[in-house]
Length: 117
Length: 110
Image 1 (tube, each protein chain N blue to C red):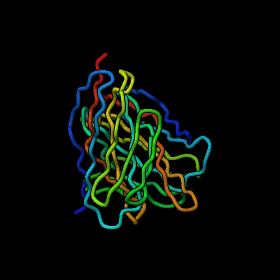
Image 2: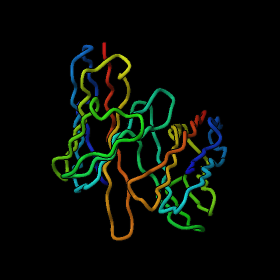
Image 3: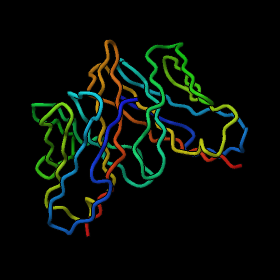
């Protein structure tokens, strides 16, 4: 199946600093990638849709100035958490959309555990 | 409003005890329904996509079915390694949207 990687898998940062998370589709090109956040024992919460070459579309309630998304190529999207605070600590998961002739399938990365101290 | 509801929230089975997980949805213009498996601390792993009512797909001990209002994930003779959270998601015709259910946490005891 299609493979999506995320880096880093875990990161600890101090309050006020910025953290960048990379999401790569390894064996296919993805025009569209998604960024999710998952709280303990909860389902996935869509944060934003990232489209290659254009601005990301953010879901209601997600601060675009805090969660900067860049999708510079067909295989790479990045999420930068700016001026991180402890409440930003969470599990962040990206996914990439694989478009077929008559289907769209979404493949997920392994996730990044962010801890802000 | 588009919604996806999964039940039960948690399910405990004995090894070999077959059961079904439910995913009911109310969306406008279903493009596809997806099932994923998620292990703790990992990203969801793709299992199946179903596109039209009546469609069925199988993979090892898992079988997914779809009607116009819901999907079932049947687990036949489960093993402890099937323990995980199972998520369903629906994709609407505005394909940039996937709506996830809250998941069913399955625990299979040996």
